[in-house]
Length: 340
Image (spheres, one colour):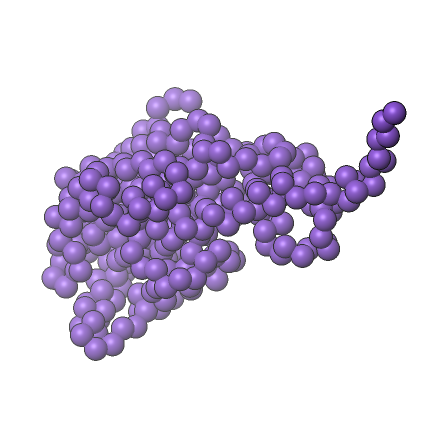
């Protein structure tokens, strides 16, 4: 594949994505129908086993290597008065990842998952989208290419998460740019001490989208104008995983907004993705309804960092364990071997 230097190359890639392996899915369906249980008794667990087979391209499904990839970036919009976190928060969080003190470290250590942290030019915030496009065409393409290159061979399940001050504002702006509605719709409503901040968020998102709406001619232009480098990298990782037949577990609002860019461009682009959990904010619930995706968990988590997606991997592992380890009706019908 030639080096990616423009969004037109991404558009070309998205127009011709690999499809699920029907033979592997058929083999999974046959085994599911023969397991020692009533048909459909394990509900979505059965569907997940078949889905894993289809995208891994083989039967039975495997979960030997689960990897968590967290992309970290900085947003120019965070410099606006009323934004929740300064850029230094990114550096402190990355330090926590490195020292093993973040929540995601505990979960990965407990389950034996690989944790990869990718800093996407953290020291260089995107431009403030209230004043100009967050990224130039080549900058956005470079971030997408970076995410694609982060996908490693041999991974059975890949979880994607993010960290970046201001990325909730970008997520809401992406959703409004893709689907319309109002900034308030995508930000949601808070009360009490957060009311003033929420009002400011709504103003920033609404004004930012209004400034660029004439130029946001397709989903990738929405990402370029109001997104962030780490969100573009997540979109790239989703593409890279699709090309390598690796099933994806998406994390919360910002991560899913990055993914939504791809589905808005190609309706099948997220067929190899499941959503791990529903974020605490209202925007994620609304986005999942648009995407027609049901999250695996709803624990009220709003931390980001891939925590909710990582917790959801255990459900996929349960699907693999049941599919591969349960007995079958064929085994019960096997004749007894007699010996002299």
